[in-house]
Amino acid sequence: MTTPPPPPDRPTVRLGSPPDIVRAIPSLLGFHPGSSLVALGLAGRRLRLRMTVRVDLPPPGLEAAVADQVAERLRGAKVSACVVVLFTAPADAGPGADRGGTALPGAGMARAAAESLRGAGLDVRELLRTESGRWWSYTCAAPCCPPEGRPVGPAPTTLLDVLRVAAGRPVFADRSALVASVGRGPGEPTGALLAAIHAREAALAGLRPGTRAARDLVDLHQLLIRGSAHRGAPRESAPARPAAAAFAPDDQDIAQVAVALTHPAVRDACVAWTAGPLADAAVVLWGEAVRRVPAPYAAAPATLLAVSAYRRGDGALADACLRRALDDDPDYRMAELVLTGLTNGLGPDDVEEALGLDGAGSVGGPRWPSSGSAPNPGGGTDAR
Image (cartoon, rainbow, N blue to C red; front, top):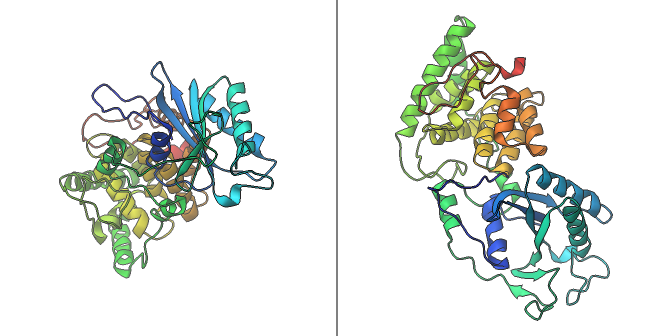
């Protein structure tokens, strides 16, 4: 998850102690990690968070390989320092682990991580372990770190929590719950929605491709303007939607989205709406489509939802959306390309440039708008 330094007009969240760090990680990831290694990559004179990386704790013998992968990811993000936290469970203790001595659970993974990260030139500022509401330091032997660990303590409401709630980004119980949030909803698609999709397809069947794309973009733009005018609390069934939006698209709206996004140029142009004043309404619309439309119609809105999540640094959600897109259509090229960028640690801007979605080197290609105007329909990522 990429987290660029905040501009001067945005609040700064300070994490000043091991308990602060442990409590903040679920908010940074968007879910409570299970048996995991989490590395916070820090950069700049003030050591601001640049990237958060999470991996499952590996089976014995694979610690060094996983540690090298994490180090390579952080080095690619050009960070200078890091904090590492191992989230362990009683089953992670392993043979010979002394829960009250120096051989803490996960010690082998911690050593491998420290060696790989320092070998990559990173300053490992802290190496922590947490389990069952307590924390330990692998590097501290002082009396402040007793063998039984120290309590993490209750999680007070912090500015980080407030900002996440305000952005409509819940913290899920675990990663599987996050993945389920972008799955197809129970009973979907309904018969009424299928009929609306067929009717929309029939209504546009006689139009030339360029005329159809232009009409689709105008219709989608009007739909997003209408959606951006709705303010209120999100429904529980739509956890990925921003808190500012109470936009409830009906079957006709979702059919319009499903059919329009089958055109690659329309889909690519819609990438522009993942930023700017219509971004929140777009997240609602793509999210509703993902949960309601039949296969393979969900591939395009799931990919757009992934780009939206990626742009705001929510890499875990972006990954879940891209895999959801590929579940619906295993050959969906744009989802494959964005997922490749995500798994290789590229930033959102790098991915946009590689796909030709930044307007560079692509005549008539979509650009990020500074207003709510409709983007140019002359894209076509699948042809690049």
